[in-house]
Structures are given as structure tokens and as C-alpha cells.
Image (cartoon, rainbow, N blue to C red; front, side, top):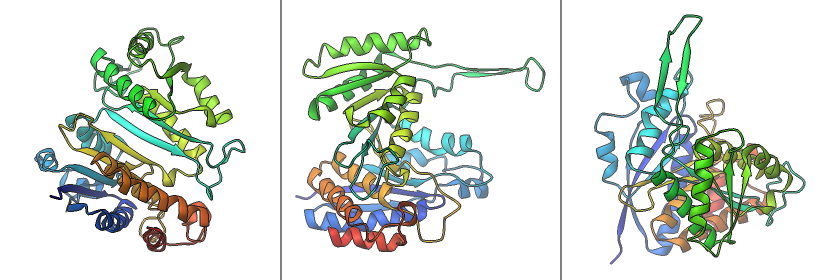
Length: 352
């Protein structure tokens, strides 16, 4: 009997309202081919809702999302609404309430999308960044004193727990074991004297339980340089919340376009729904013009299908992306073409 997967759609702001419908069209085609049944519930939670009603989502928003198997998000951000309002009003509560402690960001150089680096060739750069997603440097612990006075102070605490670090490291080591068998840990223990040595100690501890994986560690500044100089050497890279955030955007740029970069916010135990979203923002400068690149959202939808237990369907989508990009005839302006969002979506469907 075919299981029905309940998908919550949150298009959000700007081009999010254009790329989520595109991804849904692709999902519908590949789902029909593979006998997958998806049902959708769309929510208008966004910065525009915040401006209208004073909140990014309703008070019972988390309870309503809890009823779904996965969440597909477009983009959040709107002129006049500070980023910390949009993030802490929607994205971060979802990630933390649903224990989505893994942020997964695959990086791949496709044929037809030239990297700005001459050393990053298609087929040679294919790695995954595993970012700790719910604690670390992005904690809510801290505050401000003496606001408005010359001695004003801002304090932000980084929170690293043994449980939180251990689970993200185990996920990364397991993923490396299924891929190329290599893991790189991002650290800065030569400058951050408490949390990063703690992180390094736990990496060494967990490595003992994954003898088939070769691992090393790199200080974050040197690692950023090596991403640029030797992008083909990496397989799985694991980092704290802040380090993983920065490295994943750098890596997306190395791959040629942040517009095609996907991400997954995973609750590996599946006690709660996981959330899938493109890395790009809401791009208000091109919103409404019909030229947004849907590939980041489509690839995120493929990650969603894989998480839901449909790896062949997910591979069909990524194969279609590779085919369309390699042909280069139907690509959006951010990739150097002139196609519209709808035209690129139709090309993906034809490739499927």
C-alpha cells in the first residue's frame, strides 16, 4: 500500500513564492512515475504576514506543522523587516522545536555551470557540508547592558554540549562512511580556548567508533583557503553552527551559483518533520519578474524525497538538473541564460 506523505509548503517572501510552485510541479511528475503520493498544505507565513499581523506565523504554527512529514520552504526576507525578526520568528523556532540538528548542504560543480575557480572542474568537486544546526555560536544566551551609554556591553555565549556535538559528529562520520570515507572537521582551537578544544576532543572520541573513515581537522581560516585552492580534496566537512554556515555559502559560490544550492534541516530520528530549503534568499530585486532560478528549491525537494525514503526518485531529479545544466540551452539569467522560471521548470520536466 502506497504511503501518503504530507508536505507543508511555506513559500515565504520574494522569489520563494515563485520557486516553490516550480518545485511542486517537478515533485508531482517524479512522484507519479515512482508511485509516490504527496499531499500539500500551503502556509502564507512570511515577512509580509509579519507586517500585517505582527508575527511571522500564528501562535499554533508549530502544532500545525507537526502534523506533516516534511516542510518545503522557499525564502524569507523582506525590505523593512530586520533579518533577526524573520529568522527568529520562523526559521530558527522550526529548526529548534523540531530538533533539526543536522543542516546538510551538498556541494557539486555541474557541467555547464563554470566555477569561478579554474581548479574546480565538473565531476571533480562533489562534497557535503554537515553543519550543527541548533546550538553552538547561535545560542540565545547573552544580553546587553548599559544600552545607549559609552560603556555599553553586548555579550553572546556559544553553547556546546556533549550530546549536541556527539550526535552531529556521529551523523557526519556515518555519512562519510557511506560516501568516500573521508571527513574533515572545522575547528579554531588555537584561538577559541574552551569550545573548540572540546569539539576537537569529541571528534577524536567519535572517530574511534568509525574506524573505516579517514579524518583530519583544519582551522577554519586555513580551511576556507583550502576550499578555494583545493576544492576537489573534500568529501564530508563537519562544523559548528557558525563555521558550517560560513563554509557552506563559500562552497556554494565555488560551485558556480548560490542559486542552485540546496539544504536540508534534518531530524535524523524522524520524531519531528524535517525542513528543506534553498540556500538563496528572497531576492526582492528580481521578485515578480519570473526569472528566479528554481534549481535550489528543486534540489532541496530531491533531498526531501530521499529523506522520505525515495532515493531513486531523488536521483531522477538530480539527474534531470545535471542534464538541463549540461545542455545550457534553458537556464536563467543568474547562470548566464535568458530563460524564465517556467521555461527552466518545463525543461526539467522534459528531462524527467
